[in-house]
Length: 211
Ligand code: B1M
Image (cartoon, rainbow, N blue to C red; front, side, top):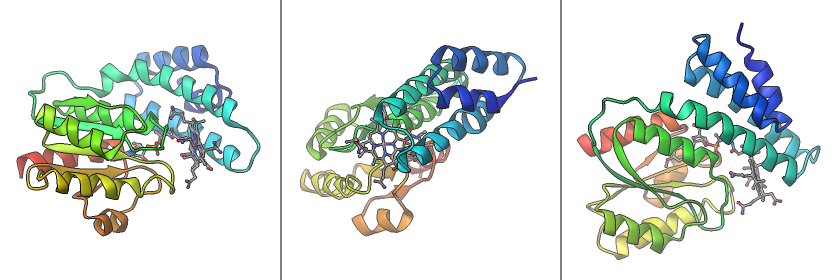
């Protein structure tokens, strides 16, 4: 029987090959991709985060765990992205300036692709001006900003201001998310929507373009 806890533990130890093998085995046994992601991999990443915070492990171990997480995500990707979907719009996504955390952003991207969006991924450490330029160039309806640090989430305010300055505020919706971000923060900076996870971000995006 699939052992999601074993996936969590392998991820914590950074054993990318074991994570891949066990994720594939769980899927073959009929466990859903979402269960594997949430109860296996994200549960493991939570433990990594706690240990990192308590100085029980350091950046190299976290990077190795992140690599194992990405290895598992590659297997889940086609399953999380459902096929027969029509393009519903274009989204520009990135992690804000100064912030290198991209795992959550990659999940949001994947879920949005699953809903049929064309997603332009700017990567991490993305400046407000780069968000605006890409939105203009690709005729995007939505800009999605991710931030994992309390010190970088404030950069989202600069994105809202840059979109405003470019005269695009009535054409482009701005979505924000990431662990330290809240609804109150979203409202305080004048962004359009905050969602706590990748799946709800994708649902909200559909709502924004079809409203
Ligand atoms: Co860093 N890090 N990190 N880190 N890291 C955190 C975020 C931290 C909480 C750890 C801790 O102390 N417990 C802490 C932040 C504290 C704070 O600001 N409050 C922290 C710190 C301090 C740092 C450094 C400053 C450490 C240092 O160097 N002293 C440094 C900063 C580097 C930088 O960015 N400039 C740093 C570095 C790193 C690594 C490079 C080693 C690595 C990142 C590797 C990578 O991403 N490629 C790393 C990691 C892996 C983490 C933890 C352990 C895991 C993050 C993660 O990927 N989670 C993290 C602790 C934790 O979160 N448990 C931690 C899994 C991911 C799926 O979740 O990204 O939250 P998440 O995404 C979620 C939701 O938030 C949401 O959807 C996803 C789930 O469905 N979501 C959105 C995300 N974006 C969204 C956008 C949306 C909507 C939803 O709409 C647009």
